[in-house]
Amino acid sequence: MLNDKIALVTGGSRGIGRAICIKLASLGAMVGINYVSNPDAAQETLNTIQSAGGKGFISKFDVSSADAVQAAIKDINEQHGSIDILVNNAGVTRDGLMARMKETDWDTVLDTNLKGAFTCTKAATRAMMKKRWGRVVNITSVIGFLGNGGQVNYGAAKAGMVGMSKSMARELAARNITVNCVAPGYILTDMTDGLPEDIQDAIKKQIPLGSFGTPEDVAGAVAFLVSPESNYVTGQAIHVNGGMYMGN
Image (tube, rainbow, N blue to C red; front, side, top):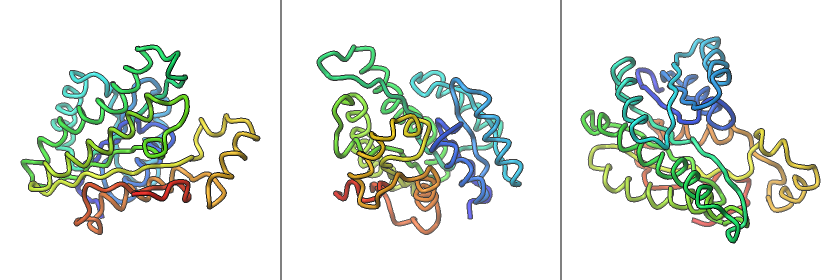
């Protein structure tokens, strides 16, 4: 389904990003696994892809640096072919109550989660516009719709991704480039695994389906948005949250 397509997944070495990389590779894409600080995890993801007969490569760069993004995407275009599919998944947290939040904690989260997605999309869509085909998927969060105490920086970044995606979708539609969001809820990752059992139980009580999702659940939504079945879908947010949030 994605044969001959080049995909780049930022933050692709573990968790949700890793599942997205594996899923897109299973559909035939050559997948670029971006990471910034964990080469072993990136290599493990690539090994998993290749052992299943898929194709991929590793690309180390920090999405919060515009210069690093431009250099990396230029290198990818030259070494592997121009990017057809971009999944902006890289993200960080610096949680804390607003009254005590440091400016650096605000800047770090906004620079990575929001500006990083903007910078990567700006760089990657240049080639997409020339080819008149492309798919961009931004991984936002249920927190961007519901909010959460102690995460004003994260909530702002993730809500900003939604508005940014809608504006990008309007700008790029004439070149047959779609831009959509996937908004995960609580997903089984290293972060949720580390929560005390009583906290996990309290969270699950807020979820109509009564359980956390899996990274593969999110990857499935991404796969739909980059597939031919979604050719007429742009500017949308797909919620993968077990019913925790049911708004638009």
